[in-house]
Length: 555
Figure 1 (cartoon, rainbow, N blue to C red):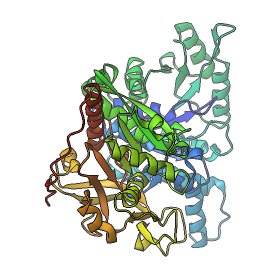
Figure 2 (cartoon, rainbow, N blue to C red):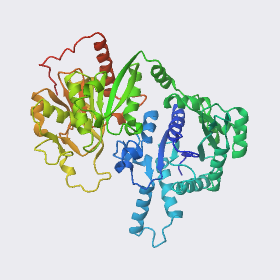
Figure 3 (cartoon, rainbow, N blue to C red):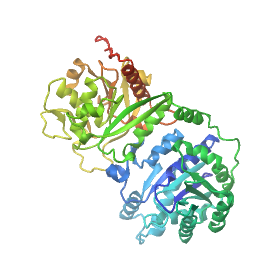
Figure 4 (spheres, rainbow, N blue to C red):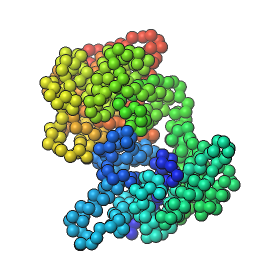
Protein backbone atom coordinates (compact mmCIF):
# COMPACT_ATOMS: atom_id res chain seq x y z
CA UNK A 1 0.00 0.00 0.00
CA UNK A 2 1.26 3.49 -0.87
CA UNK A 3 2.45 5.65 2.02
CA UNK A 4 1.36 8.80 0.19
CA UNK A 5 -0.88 11.27 2.03
CA UNK A 6 -3.73 13.18 0.41
CA UNK A 7 -4.92 16.75 0.91
CA UNK A 8 -8.17 17.87 -0.72
CA UNK A 9 -8.98 21.53 -1.33
CA UNK A 10 -12.67 22.37 -1.75
CA UNK A 11 -14.35 25.75 -2.15
CA UNK A 12 -17.50 27.31 -0.78
CA UNK A 13 -19.66 30.46 -0.82
CA UNK A 14 -18.29 31.73 -4.13
CA UNK A 15 -16.18 30.74 -7.08
CA UNK A 16 -12.87 32.46 -7.91
CA UNK A 17 -11.67 32.53 -4.31
CA UNK A 18 -8.31 31.10 -5.35
CA UNK A 19 -8.30 27.35 -4.64
CA UNK A 20 -5.52 26.94 -7.20
CA UNK A 21 -3.32 29.58 -5.56
CA UNK A 22 -3.92 28.17 -2.07
CA UNK A 23 -3.13 24.66 -3.34
CA UNK A 24 0.04 25.87 -5.08
CA UNK A 25 1.12 27.93 -2.05
CA UNK A 26 0.68 25.02 0.34
CA UNK A 27 2.56 22.76 -2.07
CA UNK A 28 5.38 25.31 -2.28
CA UNK A 29 5.73 25.41 1.52
CA UNK A 30 5.74 21.62 1.79
CA UNK A 31 8.22 21.33 -1.08
CA UNK A 32 10.45 23.92 0.63
CA UNK A 33 10.50 21.60 3.66
CA UNK A 34 11.97 18.86 1.49
CA UNK A 35 8.78 16.89 0.83
CA UNK A 36 7.88 15.47 -2.59
CA UNK A 37 4.61 17.13 -3.55
CA UNK A 38 2.37 17.34 -6.60
CA UNK A 39 -1.03 18.92 -7.26
CA UNK A 40 -3.92 17.74 -9.39
CA UNK A 41 -7.16 19.38 -10.47
CA UNK A 42 -10.57 17.72 -10.68
CA UNK A 43 -12.81 19.76 -12.99
CA UNK A 44 -16.60 19.19 -12.80
CA UNK A 45 -17.45 20.22 -16.36
CA UNK A 46 -18.45 17.55 -18.89
CA UNK A 47 -15.98 18.54 -21.60
CA UNK A 48 -13.31 15.86 -21.87
CA UNK A 49 -10.69 18.60 -21.64
CA UNK A 50 -10.59 22.39 -22.16
CA UNK A 51 -8.98 22.04 -25.59
CA UNK A 52 -12.19 22.84 -27.48
CA UNK A 53 -13.37 25.57 -25.11
CA UNK A 54 -13.41 29.22 -26.13
CA UNK A 55 -10.92 31.21 -24.01
CA UNK A 56 -13.80 33.47 -22.94
CA UNK A 57 -15.38 30.38 -21.37
CA UNK A 58 -12.42 29.01 -19.49
CA UNK A 59 -9.36 31.20 -19.90
CA UNK A 60 -6.25 29.82 -21.55
CA UNK A 61 -5.76 26.14 -22.30
CA UNK A 62 -2.55 25.02 -20.59
CA UNK A 63 -0.50 22.31 -22.32
CA UNK A 64 1.83 19.86 -20.58
CA UNK A 65 4.98 18.17 -21.90
CA UNK A 66 3.08 14.97 -22.59
CA UNK A 67 0.51 16.77 -24.71
CA UNK A 68 -2.42 17.13 -22.33
CA UNK A 69 -4.71 20.14 -22.83
CA UNK A 70 -5.51 21.12 -19.27
CA UNK A 71 -6.96 23.68 -16.89
CA UNK A 72 -4.99 26.91 -16.43
CA UNK A 73 -4.51 26.11 -12.73
CA UNK A 74 -1.84 23.61 -13.77
CA UNK A 75 0.13 26.65 -14.90
CA UNK A 76 0.03 27.97 -11.34
CA UNK A 77 1.16 24.58 -10.04
CA UNK A 78 4.17 24.54 -12.35
CA UNK A 79 5.06 28.20 -11.83
CA UNK A 80 5.10 27.75 -8.04
CA UNK A 81 6.72 24.30 -7.83
CA UNK A 82 9.03 24.53 -10.86
CA UNK A 83 8.01 20.93 -11.60
CA UNK A 84 6.26 19.77 -14.79
CA UNK A 85 2.76 18.33 -14.62
CA UNK A 86 1.19 15.69 -16.86
CA UNK A 87 -2.11 14.27 -18.06
CA UNK A 88 -2.58 12.67 -14.65
CA UNK A 89 -2.69 16.11 -12.99
CA UNK A 90 -5.99 17.19 -14.57
CA UNK A 91 -9.19 15.15 -14.77
CA UNK A 92 -12.66 16.27 -15.88
CA UNK A 93 -16.10 14.79 -15.38
CA UNK A 94 -16.19 14.26 -19.14
CA UNK A 95 -13.03 12.15 -18.96
CA UNK A 96 -14.38 10.16 -16.00
CA UNK A 97 -17.68 9.35 -17.72
CA UNK A 98 -15.97 8.62 -21.04
CA UNK A 99 -13.69 6.07 -19.37
CA UNK A 100 -16.55 4.44 -17.45
CA UNK A 101 -18.79 4.24 -20.51
CA UNK A 102 -15.93 2.79 -22.56
CA UNK A 103 -15.43 0.09 -19.92
CA UNK A 104 -19.17 -0.65 -19.94
CA UNK A 105 -19.11 -1.08 -23.74
CA UNK A 106 -16.16 -3.45 -23.37
CA UNK A 107 -18.06 -5.56 -20.84
CA UNK A 108 -15.71 -4.81 -17.95
CA UNK A 109 -18.60 -4.52 -15.47
CA UNK A 110 -19.96 -7.98 -16.36
CA UNK A 111 -23.50 -6.81 -17.02
CA UNK A 112 -23.87 -4.78 -13.83
CA UNK A 113 -26.04 -1.65 -13.86
CA UNK A 114 -23.57 1.23 -14.17
CA UNK A 115 -24.25 3.89 -11.54
CA UNK A 116 -22.69 7.04 -10.09
CA UNK A 117 -21.98 4.99 -6.95
CA UNK A 118 -19.90 2.89 -7.14
CA UNK A 119 -18.70 3.09 -10.76
CA UNK A 120 -18.21 6.83 -11.24
CA UNK A 121 -16.87 7.37 -7.72
CA UNK A 122 -14.54 4.38 -8.06
CA UNK A 123 -13.10 5.87 -11.25
CA UNK A 124 -12.65 9.25 -9.53
CA UNK A 125 -10.87 7.57 -6.61
CA UNK A 126 -8.65 5.64 -8.99
CA UNK A 127 -7.70 8.86 -10.76
CA UNK A 128 -7.07 10.67 -7.47
CA UNK A 129 -4.70 7.95 -6.25
CA UNK A 130 -2.94 7.41 -9.58
CA UNK A 131 -0.15 9.89 -8.79
CA UNK A 132 0.11 8.77 -5.17
CA UNK A 133 0.55 5.14 -6.17
CA UNK A 134 3.63 5.90 -8.28
CA UNK A 135 5.79 6.13 -5.15
CA UNK A 136 7.14 9.49 -6.38
CA UNK A 137 5.31 11.68 -3.89
CA UNK A 138 4.88 12.09 -0.14
CA UNK A 139 1.78 14.27 -0.50
CA UNK A 140 -0.73 14.70 -3.32
CA UNK A 141 -2.86 17.85 -3.15
CA UNK A 142 -6.14 17.57 -5.05
CA UNK A 143 -8.11 20.69 -5.93
CA UNK A 144 -11.82 20.01 -6.43
CA UNK A 145 -13.18 22.50 -8.96
CA UNK A 146 -16.43 24.36 -8.54
CA UNK A 147 -18.23 25.21 -5.31
CA UNK A 148 -19.65 22.90 -2.65
CA UNK A 149 -23.39 22.55 -3.26
CA UNK A 150 -23.05 22.50 -7.05
CA UNK A 151 -24.71 19.47 -8.65
CA UNK A 152 -21.61 18.95 -10.80
CA UNK A 153 -19.25 18.53 -7.84
CA UNK A 154 -21.34 16.01 -5.86
CA UNK A 155 -19.58 12.85 -7.19
CA UNK A 156 -16.19 14.35 -6.28
CA UNK A 157 -17.21 15.26 -2.75
CA UNK A 158 -18.68 11.77 -2.32
CA UNK A 159 -15.38 10.30 -3.53
CA UNK A 160 -13.53 12.40 -0.96
CA UNK A 161 -15.90 11.14 1.74
CA UNK A 162 -15.20 7.55 0.77
CA UNK A 163 -11.43 8.10 0.67
CA UNK A 164 -11.41 9.70 4.11
CA UNK A 165 -13.16 6.59 5.43
CA UNK A 166 -10.94 4.16 3.49
CA UNK A 167 -7.56 5.82 4.14
CA UNK A 168 -8.18 7.22 7.62
CA UNK A 169 -8.08 10.76 9.01
CA UNK A 170 -4.27 10.85 9.28
CA UNK A 171 -3.79 9.98 5.61
CA UNK A 172 -6.48 12.12 4.07
CA UNK A 173 -7.56 15.63 5.12
CA UNK A 174 -9.82 18.33 3.66
CA UNK A 175 -9.08 22.04 3.43
CA UNK A 176 -12.17 24.11 2.74
CA UNK A 177 -11.61 27.54 1.19
CA UNK A 178 -14.41 29.89 2.04
CA UNK A 179 -15.29 33.58 2.20
CA UNK A 180 -15.81 35.87 5.15
CA UNK A 181 -17.32 39.00 3.57
CA UNK A 182 -17.07 42.49 5.01
CA UNK A 183 -20.29 44.48 5.13
CA UNK A 184 -19.24 48.08 4.73
CA UNK A 185 -22.51 49.54 6.02
CA UNK A 186 -22.36 47.45 9.20
CA UNK A 187 -18.54 47.67 9.44
CA UNK A 188 -18.49 43.96 10.22
CA UNK A 189 -17.01 40.71 8.96
CA UNK A 190 -19.75 38.11 8.62
CA UNK A 191 -19.15 34.40 9.33
CA UNK A 192 -22.62 33.12 8.41
CA UNK A 193 -21.75 32.35 4.72
CA UNK A 194 -18.84 30.22 5.93
CA UNK A 195 -21.05 28.42 8.45
CA UNK A 196 -23.60 27.62 5.74
CA UNK A 197 -20.89 26.47 3.36
CA UNK A 198 -19.50 24.06 5.94
CA UNK A 199 -23.06 22.90 6.67
CA UNK A 200 -23.48 22.09 2.95
CA UNK A 201 -20.23 20.11 3.06
CA UNK A 202 -21.37 18.26 6.19
CA UNK A 203 -24.65 17.36 4.50
CA UNK A 204 -22.56 15.67 1.81
CA UNK A 205 -20.76 13.68 4.49
CA UNK A 206 -17.46 15.55 4.70
CA UNK A 207 -16.13 17.37 7.75
CA UNK A 208 -13.40 19.86 6.79
CA UNK A 209 -10.21 19.67 8.84
CA UNK A 210 -8.93 23.16 8.02
CA UNK A 211 -10.76 26.32 6.96
CA UNK A 212 -8.92 28.88 4.85
CA UNK A 213 -10.92 32.10 5.00
CA UNK A 214 -10.62 34.66 2.21
CA UNK A 215 -11.09 38.13 3.64
CA UNK A 216 -10.45 41.81 3.00
CA UNK A 217 -9.74 42.49 6.69
CA UNK A 218 -7.74 40.67 9.34
CA UNK A 219 -9.56 38.09 11.46
CA UNK A 220 -9.32 38.68 15.20
CA UNK A 221 -9.12 35.88 17.74
CA UNK A 222 -12.80 36.18 18.71
CA UNK A 223 -13.95 35.74 15.14
CA UNK A 224 -11.61 32.78 14.63
CA UNK A 225 -12.94 31.15 17.77
CA UNK A 226 -16.52 31.64 16.58
CA UNK A 227 -15.78 30.07 13.20
CA UNK A 228 -13.95 27.17 14.84
CA UNK A 229 -16.81 26.53 17.28
CA UNK A 230 -19.61 26.59 14.71
CA UNK A 231 -17.70 24.69 12.04
CA UNK A 232 -16.25 21.93 14.26
CA UNK A 233 -12.55 22.65 13.67
CA UNK A 234 -9.71 23.50 16.02
CA UNK A 235 -8.95 27.20 16.38
CA UNK A 236 -5.49 26.83 14.84
CA UNK A 237 -7.23 25.33 11.80
CA UNK A 238 -8.95 28.64 11.00
CA UNK A 239 -6.51 30.22 8.58
CA UNK A 240 -6.70 33.80 7.36
CA UNK A 241 -6.18 34.39 3.64
CA UNK A 242 -6.23 38.15 3.28
CA UNK A 243 -6.23 39.83 -0.13
CA UNK A 244 -2.64 40.06 -1.35
CA UNK A 245 -0.82 42.47 -3.64
CA UNK A 246 0.42 39.56 -5.73
CA UNK A 247 -0.35 35.84 -5.94
CA UNK A 248 3.35 35.31 -5.21
CA UNK A 249 2.85 36.80 -1.73
CA UNK A 250 0.44 34.01 -0.78
CA UNK A 251 3.02 31.33 0.16
CA UNK A 252 4.60 33.71 2.67
CA UNK A 253 1.19 34.70 4.03
CA UNK A 254 0.29 31.03 4.46
CA UNK A 255 3.65 30.43 6.14
CA UNK A 256 2.83 33.21 8.61
CA UNK A 257 -0.52 31.50 9.26
CA UNK A 258 1.24 28.13 9.84
CA UNK A 259 -0.89 26.40 7.20
CA UNK A 260 1.88 23.95 6.35
CA UNK A 261 2.52 23.09 10.01
CA UNK A 262 -1.19 22.56 10.63
CA UNK A 263 -1.47 20.27 7.61
CA UNK A 264 1.56 18.22 8.67
CA UNK A 265 0.24 17.98 12.22
CA UNK A 266 -3.12 16.63 11.07
CA UNK A 267 -1.38 14.16 8.75
CA UNK A 268 0.87 13.09 11.66
CA UNK A 269 3.98 14.01 9.69
CA UNK A 270 7.10 15.53 11.20
CA UNK A 271 7.44 19.23 10.35
CA UNK A 272 11.24 19.33 10.44
CA UNK A 273 13.16 22.47 9.52
CA UNK A 274 11.49 25.69 8.46
CA UNK A 275 10.84 25.98 4.71
CA UNK A 276 13.78 27.29 2.68
CA UNK A 277 12.22 30.16 0.73
CA UNK A 278 15.33 32.26 0.14
CA UNK A 279 15.07 32.24 -3.67
CA UNK A 280 11.33 32.99 -3.46
CA UNK A 281 11.98 35.98 -1.20
CA UNK A 282 14.73 37.19 -3.53
CA UNK A 283 12.27 37.03 -6.44
CA UNK A 284 9.67 39.00 -4.47
CA UNK A 285 12.28 41.59 -3.50
CA UNK A 286 13.13 42.23 -7.15
CA UNK A 287 9.47 42.13 -8.18
CA UNK A 288 8.50 44.81 -5.66
CA UNK A 289 11.55 47.03 -6.08
CA UNK A 290 12.09 47.54 -9.81
CA UNK A 291 14.70 49.99 -11.00
CA UNK A 292 13.08 50.59 -14.39
CA UNK A 293 9.77 50.30 -16.21
CA UNK A 294 8.70 49.44 -19.76
CA UNK A 295 5.43 49.28 -21.65
CA UNK A 296 4.78 46.17 -23.72
CA UNK A 297 1.70 45.77 -25.87
CA UNK A 298 -0.08 42.43 -25.70
CA UNK A 299 -2.00 42.18 -28.96
CA UNK A 300 -4.69 39.52 -29.20
CA UNK A 301 -8.39 39.01 -29.68
CA UNK A 302 -9.30 37.79 -26.18
CA UNK A 303 -7.77 40.68 -24.23
CA UNK A 304 -11.03 41.46 -22.40
CA UNK A 305 -10.36 38.39 -20.25
CA UNK A 306 -6.99 38.48 -18.48
CA UNK A 307 -7.02 34.68 -17.95
CA UNK A 308 -7.05 34.12 -21.72
CA UNK A 309 -3.33 35.00 -21.76
CA UNK A 310 -2.54 34.07 -18.15
CA UNK A 311 0.79 32.35 -18.77
CA UNK A 312 2.05 35.21 -20.94
CA UNK A 313 1.20 37.75 -18.24
CA UNK A 314 2.90 35.65 -15.56
CA UNK A 315 5.96 35.20 -17.81
CA UNK A 316 6.30 38.99 -17.94
CA UNK A 317 6.24 39.06 -14.13
CA UNK A 318 9.02 36.46 -13.91
CA UNK A 319 11.18 38.03 -16.63
CA UNK A 320 10.54 41.53 -15.32
CA UNK A 321 11.79 40.54 -11.87
CA UNK A 322 15.00 39.09 -13.33
CA UNK A 323 15.61 42.38 -15.14
CA UNK A 324 14.51 44.37 -12.05
CA UNK A 325 11.99 45.99 -14.34
CA UNK A 326 8.27 46.60 -13.94
CA UNK A 327 6.59 45.42 -17.13
CA UNK A 328 3.37 47.31 -17.77
CA UNK A 329 1.36 45.07 -20.06
CA UNK A 330 -0.93 47.12 -22.30
CA UNK A 331 -3.76 44.95 -23.63
CA UNK A 332 -4.72 45.82 -27.20
CA UNK A 333 -7.53 44.21 -29.18
CA UNK A 334 -6.23 43.32 -32.64
CA UNK A 335 -9.62 44.03 -34.24
CA UNK A 336 -9.25 47.68 -33.26
CA UNK A 337 -5.85 48.24 -34.89
CA UNK A 338 -6.00 49.90 -38.31
CA UNK A 339 -3.48 51.62 -40.63
CA UNK A 340 -5.00 54.94 -39.56
CA UNK A 341 -4.56 54.48 -35.79
CA UNK A 342 -1.55 52.15 -35.56
CA UNK A 343 0.99 54.92 -34.88
CA UNK A 344 -1.15 56.50 -32.19
CA UNK A 345 -1.82 53.07 -30.64
CA UNK A 346 1.69 51.59 -30.66
CA UNK A 347 4.21 54.45 -30.80
CA UNK A 348 4.68 54.71 -27.02
CA UNK A 349 5.33 50.99 -26.55
CA UNK A 350 8.80 49.59 -25.84
CA UNK A 351 7.84 46.13 -27.09
CA UNK A 352 5.03 44.35 -28.94
CA UNK A 353 3.93 40.76 -28.36
CA UNK A 354 1.41 39.25 -30.77
CA UNK A 355 -0.39 36.48 -28.93
CA UNK A 356 -1.43 32.98 -30.01
CA UNK A 357 -4.97 32.18 -31.09
CA UNK A 358 -7.15 30.62 -33.74
CA UNK A 359 -9.35 31.89 -36.56
CA UNK A 360 -9.49 34.89 -38.87
CA UNK A 361 -10.97 37.47 -36.51
CA UNK A 362 -8.47 40.26 -35.78
CA UNK A 363 -5.77 38.84 -38.08
CA UNK A 364 -5.30 41.97 -40.19
CA UNK A 365 -4.87 44.09 -37.07
CA UNK A 366 -2.09 41.76 -35.91
CA UNK A 367 -0.37 42.02 -39.31
CA UNK A 368 -0.61 45.83 -39.23
CA UNK A 369 0.94 45.89 -35.75
CA UNK A 370 3.78 43.57 -36.82
CA UNK A 371 4.54 45.77 -39.83
CA UNK A 372 4.74 48.79 -37.54
CA UNK A 373 7.10 46.97 -35.14
CA UNK A 374 9.32 45.83 -38.02
CA UNK A 375 9.54 49.22 -39.71
CA UNK A 376 10.02 51.21 -36.50
CA UNK A 377 12.55 48.89 -34.82
CA UNK A 378 10.28 48.16 -31.85
CA UNK A 379 11.20 44.85 -30.16
CA UNK A 380 8.76 42.20 -31.33
CA UNK A 381 7.84 38.75 -30.04
CA UNK A 382 5.40 36.53 -31.95
CA UNK A 383 4.07 33.36 -30.35
CA UNK A 384 2.46 30.58 -32.43
CA UNK A 385 -0.14 32.47 -34.51
CA UNK A 386 1.89 35.62 -33.78
CA UNK A 387 4.89 34.05 -35.51
CA UNK A 388 2.71 32.97 -38.43
CA UNK A 389 1.30 36.49 -38.82
CA UNK A 390 4.87 37.82 -38.89
CA UNK A 391 5.66 35.46 -41.77
CA UNK A 392 2.57 36.60 -43.69
CA UNK A 393 3.43 40.27 -43.08
CA UNK A 394 7.00 39.81 -44.29
CA UNK A 395 5.89 37.94 -47.41
CA UNK A 396 3.38 40.65 -48.29
CA UNK A 397 5.38 43.77 -47.52
CA UNK A 398 9.02 42.75 -48.06
CA UNK A 399 8.88 39.91 -50.57
CA UNK A 400 6.09 41.64 -52.49
CA UNK A 401 3.69 38.68 -52.40
CA UNK A 402 0.51 40.70 -51.91
CA UNK A 403 -1.81 37.69 -51.65
CA UNK A 404 0.32 35.75 -49.14
CA UNK A 405 -1.74 34.26 -46.31
CA UNK A 406 -2.32 31.29 -44.06
CA UNK A 407 -4.61 28.52 -45.25
CA UNK A 408 -6.28 28.71 -41.85
CA UNK A 409 -7.64 32.13 -42.83
CA UNK A 410 -7.88 31.63 -46.59
CA UNK A 411 -7.94 28.02 -47.77
CA UNK A 412 -7.70 29.12 -51.41
CA UNK A 413 -4.73 31.49 -51.12
CA UNK A 414 -2.31 31.04 -54.05
CA UNK A 415 0.61 31.79 -51.72
CA UNK A 416 0.18 29.75 -48.52
CA UNK A 417 3.16 31.01 -46.54
CA UNK A 418 1.52 29.23 -43.60
CA UNK A 419 -0.21 25.93 -44.36
CA UNK A 420 -1.75 23.01 -42.51
CA UNK A 421 0.66 20.31 -41.42
CA UNK A 422 0.45 17.21 -43.65
CA UNK A 423 -0.47 14.87 -40.79
CA UNK A 424 -3.35 17.19 -39.80
CA UNK A 425 -5.15 17.23 -43.16
CA UNK A 426 -7.09 13.99 -42.64
CA UNK A 427 -8.07 14.68 -39.04
CA UNK A 428 -11.78 15.37 -38.44
CA UNK A 429 -12.08 15.30 -34.63
CA UNK A 430 -11.11 18.59 -33.00
CA UNK A 431 -10.34 17.62 -29.40
CA UNK A 432 -6.78 16.55 -28.57
CA UNK A 433 -5.71 16.17 -32.20
CA UNK A 434 -3.34 19.11 -32.73
CA UNK A 435 0.44 18.92 -32.57
CA UNK A 436 0.55 18.93 -28.78
CA UNK A 437 3.24 18.75 -26.13
CA UNK A 438 7.02 18.95 -26.07
CA UNK A 439 9.06 18.70 -29.27
CA UNK A 440 12.78 19.16 -29.86
CA UNK A 441 14.25 22.19 -31.60
CA UNK A 442 17.79 22.69 -32.92
CA UNK A 443 18.87 26.32 -32.45
CA UNK A 444 21.45 27.93 -34.70
CA UNK A 445 24.49 29.52 -33.09
CA UNK A 446 24.80 33.25 -33.55
CA UNK A 447 21.04 33.77 -33.37
CA UNK A 448 19.07 35.78 -30.81
CA UNK A 449 17.48 32.52 -29.70
CA UNK A 450 20.90 31.00 -29.03
CA UNK A 451 21.88 34.12 -27.10
CA UNK A 452 18.83 33.51 -24.90
CA UNK A 453 19.02 29.74 -24.47
CA UNK A 454 22.83 29.35 -24.53
CA UNK A 455 22.40 25.93 -26.09
CA UNK A 456 21.63 24.47 -29.51
CA UNK A 457 19.21 21.79 -28.23
CA UNK A 458 15.94 22.82 -26.62
CA UNK A 459 12.50 21.33 -26.03
CA UNK A 460 9.33 23.43 -26.04
CA UNK A 461 5.57 22.84 -25.86
CA UNK A 462 3.33 23.16 -28.89
CA UNK A 463 -0.36 23.53 -29.71
CA UNK A 464 -1.02 24.12 -33.40
CA UNK A 465 -2.19 22.63 -36.71
CA UNK A 466 -0.51 25.04 -39.14
CA UNK A 467 3.16 25.60 -39.93
CA UNK A 468 5.59 27.72 -41.89
CA UNK A 469 5.65 26.53 -45.51
CA UNK A 470 9.25 25.52 -46.26
CA UNK A 471 8.71 26.30 -49.95
CA UNK A 472 9.30 29.93 -48.95
CA UNK A 473 12.33 29.17 -46.74
CA UNK A 474 14.97 30.34 -49.22
CA UNK A 475 13.20 33.59 -50.12
CA UNK A 476 12.79 34.48 -46.45
CA UNK A 477 16.42 33.69 -45.63
CA UNK A 478 17.80 35.62 -48.59
CA UNK A 479 15.86 38.70 -47.49
CA UNK A 480 16.92 38.62 -43.85
CA UNK A 481 14.04 36.86 -42.10
CA UNK A 482 15.98 33.81 -41.03
CA UNK A 483 14.69 30.48 -39.66
CA UNK A 484 17.02 29.90 -36.68
CA UNK A 485 15.28 26.96 -35.03
CA UNK A 486 14.14 23.73 -36.67
CA UNK A 487 12.64 20.49 -35.48
CA UNK A 488 15.42 17.97 -36.25
CA UNK A 489 13.01 15.21 -37.35
CA UNK A 490 10.28 16.99 -39.32
CA UNK A 491 12.31 20.06 -40.34
CA UNK A 492 9.42 22.28 -39.27
CA UNK A 493 10.45 25.88 -38.66
CA UNK A 494 10.24 26.58 -34.92
CA UNK A 495 12.01 29.96 -34.65
CA UNK A 496 12.37 32.78 -37.16
CA UNK A 497 14.28 36.05 -36.66
CA UNK A 498 14.73 39.34 -38.49
CA UNK A 499 18.44 40.11 -38.75
CA UNK A 500 18.40 43.90 -39.22
CA UNK A 501 16.31 44.66 -36.17
CA UNK A 502 17.07 45.16 -32.46
CA UNK A 503 14.93 42.15 -31.44
CA UNK A 504 12.37 40.54 -33.76
CA UNK A 505 11.66 36.89 -32.94
CA UNK A 506 8.77 34.60 -33.79
CA UNK A 507 8.34 31.11 -32.35
CA UNK A 508 5.91 28.37 -33.35
CA UNK A 509 5.81 26.96 -29.82
CA UNK A 510 4.53 28.39 -26.52
CA UNK A 511 7.46 29.52 -24.36
CA UNK A 512 5.09 31.04 -21.80
CA UNK A 513 4.08 27.55 -20.71
CA UNK A 514 7.54 26.81 -19.28
CA UNK A 515 8.25 30.05 -17.43
CA UNK A 516 8.40 29.65 -13.64
CA UNK A 517 9.46 31.76 -10.67
CA UNK A 518 12.71 29.83 -10.32
CA UNK A 519 13.32 29.60 -14.10
CA UNK A 520 11.92 32.55 -16.04
CA UNK A 521 11.80 31.73 -19.73
CA UNK A 522 15.00 32.97 -21.44
CA UNK A 523 13.15 34.40 -24.46
CA UNK A 524 10.91 36.50 -22.24
CA UNK A 525 13.95 37.62 -20.24
CA UNK A 526 15.69 38.75 -23.44
CA UNK A 527 12.54 40.36 -24.82
CA UNK A 528 12.09 42.46 -21.68
CA UNK A 529 15.79 43.35 -21.81
CA UNK A 530 15.33 44.47 -25.43
CA UNK A 531 12.34 46.60 -24.39
CA UNK A 532 14.51 48.22 -21.71
CA UNK A 533 17.14 49.00 -24.38
CA UNK A 534 14.40 50.48 -26.57
CA UNK A 535 13.33 52.79 -23.77
CA UNK A 536 16.92 53.83 -23.10
CA UNK A 537 17.49 54.46 -26.82
CA UNK A 538 14.39 56.66 -27.00
CA UNK A 539 15.42 58.63 -23.93
CA UNK A 540 18.82 59.23 -25.52
CA UNK A 541 17.15 59.90 -28.89
CA UNK A 542 19.55 57.47 -30.55
CA UNK A 543 18.71 55.54 -33.73
CA UNK A 544 19.01 51.77 -33.87
CA UNK A 545 22.32 50.58 -35.26
CA UNK A 546 21.59 47.74 -37.68
CA UNK A 547 23.57 44.51 -37.48
CA UNK A 548 26.32 43.85 -39.97
CA UNK A 549 24.67 42.49 -43.10
CA UNK A 550 27.27 39.73 -43.28
CA UNK A 551 26.29 38.27 -39.88
CA UNK A 552 26.12 34.49 -40.17
CA UNK A 553 23.89 32.06 -38.31
CA UNK A 554 26.04 28.95 -38.05
CA UNK A 555 24.89 25.44 -37.34
